Image (cartoon, rainbow, N blue to C red):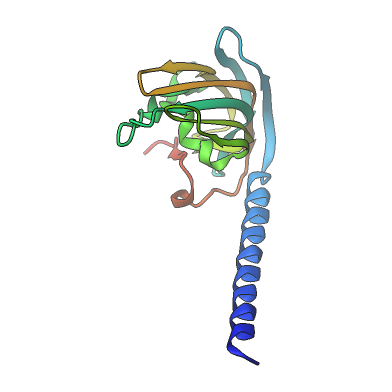
Length: 212
């Protein structure tokens, strides 16, 4: 066997191994996301540029992790000036959302404000690709996927209140940058008895709501 054949076989083995690892990771992630029992689902669409819900759900188990996730689709387009090098916008300011959990007495037990852009890299996208018009570059993408917003250990069983609000439309324009993005839909769900994720691989928070 000559050296070129050996190199080709080695490259094939490496690529085959990487593909196997990729599919294994995807299957494991899908199995992890579907773990537990769904206790609530909210099908939402933007109204006046905002997606929000205020509703309750019932937790029947204690000592097991619960998860709040989102299944969504959105369209976005961006334009960058050829002079923007080193002057990218702060994407953490785009699509801010607030999530709040309250117990049966109406007392807030958890609240956070973050940017949904933290999770976009975990969603798939259908890209129309980069184009290069005069003085700049533009990009269009249709994103859709399922992401985890929060995992929590409840303090007790019973009714919890979920309040969620997201800025679903963004129209930002400066001298060197323009971005237009709109969420087409977003489904929030709550699952109990889930397999918690390994935190280092994800962007969401894991919180223990039990008394210290």
